[in-house]
Image (cartoon, rainbow, N blue to C red):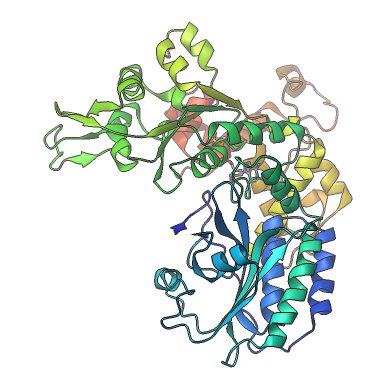
Length: 521
Ligand SMILES: Nc1ncnc2c1ncn2[C@@H]1O[C@H](COP(=O)(O)OP(=O)(O)OP(=O)(O)O)[C@@H](O)[C@H]1O
C-alpha cells in the first residue's frame, strides 16, 4: 500500500459531519448531488460533496469513493473522508475494497479483529479505528467494475444491515450515472482505451481543458513513466511546478521524494551547496557534513526551478550528475553516487543564453530530452480562464470560511479579457482578493486589476501631456504595478524580482520605498 501526496496540496480536510444525521432516502442524496453535477466547478469539491452526502444518508462516519487504476491493478481513493493522508492505494484483491473490486459482490463487516478480508494497515497508518464497514462495487453502463463505494463505522454502533447494502447498491448505480456527466468519466474512458496509461491523481489539481493543455497532459503521460529528463518552459506563474509534480507522481518514482531547488531564490554562491551539500570543514562554520538536495532526493525527483539562474561552474557539476549520476560534495573528494530523475523549469530563453555563452550547450541538450512548453494563460482562451476563476473562487471561499460568492457576468468578462502577465498565479491572487472583499457577488470593482492593461502605449509623452486622455496611467504607476506583479510572480523574493526586472537589489529597495510599497521581505 502507498500513501501519496499529490502536488503542493495537503490532505483534503473535510468539515465535520453533522452529528447523528437524520436518515434520508437514496433519491434525496442523488437529487441534491444531481444538481451539483450540472454545475461542476471543481471535480474534487464535487466528489467530496458526493461522499459527504453518501455518508450522511448511510448514517456512516466516513465514506470513500475508490476507483480502479487498470494499468497498475490498484484501487485508489479518489474522494474520501481521509484527513490523515492525501490518498490511499491498495492492490486489487487487497483489503475489503480490493476484494469487492475483484469479485464484484458487496461486503459488510463488523467484527474486524482477525477478519482476513480487513486490511488493518490502513487503520494503523491513519490512526482511525474502523468498527464496521460496508463496500459495494461501482459498475459502468456495460456492467464492468471500475470502482468501489465504501462507508465506515455506522453511527450509533452495530453493523450495516442488509437494507443498508441494498441502499448503498442503489446509490452506487445512481452515482455511476451521475459520474458520466463529469470529466472523471472521460478520464476513466481514456484509461480503458489506453490500458497502459494509468489513471488517478494525475491531473486532478490541474484545471484546464483547452486544446493546449490537453496536448500537454498527453505529453506528460508519455514522458512521466520513463526516466527522461524533462524541461518545462513557460512564463512565471503558468503552472511549471504543478506540471513538474505531475511528471513525478505519474512516474515510477512516485513513492520517493520530490525535492525542489529554486535557483532564483538562492544567491549564486549558495546554489552549489544546496544541490550537492558540503563536507565538514568545507568553509568557515561548516562543522558537519550536510547532504544536498540530490542526496535528499535519492531514488526520487529533483525539481530544479529557474535552471537559467544556475552559475556556470555549477552547470558543469550538474552535467556530470546527468551523465554519470555522480558528484562530490562541496569541499569533498569522495564521489557520491545518486539515482535521481531531473525535472527542470525556466522562464528564460535558454537557447539565447546558450548563444550568449551564459548557459552550457551540452547541459541544455541534456535537460531538454522532453521539452514541455506551457502556454501563458492569455493564450489558453476564455473557457480555461473561467474554469480556473470558478475553481479559485470556490477554493478561496472555503479557505477563508466564507459563503461562496457569485461571479458577475461583468467581472467574468473582465477576467477573460485581461492579459494576465502573472498568469495563473496572478488570477489566483486576484480572485482570492475579490472573494475576501466582495459581498455575496464579485463585481468588476472587486478585481484588483489595472484599468489599462497594456503598458506599451504609456510613454513619457503621455505623462508629460498637459491633458492626457482619460484611462492612461502615469509611467510611475505602471512601474509600481509592474514591480508588484513581478514580486507576486516570484512569491515576494526580492533577489528574484530584482533579477527579473534587471535592476539591482538596492534599486528595487529604493523603488519600493519610493512607491510606498512594503520594504519588508
Ligand atoms: N492549470 C492550473 N490549475 C490549477 N492551478 C494552477 C494551474 N496552473 C497554475 N496553478 C496555480 O498557480 C500558481 C502558480 O503555479 P506554479 O507555481 O506551478 O507556476 P510556475 O510556472 O512554476 O511559477 P514560477 O515560474 O513563478 O515558479 C500555483 O498556486 C498553482 O497551484
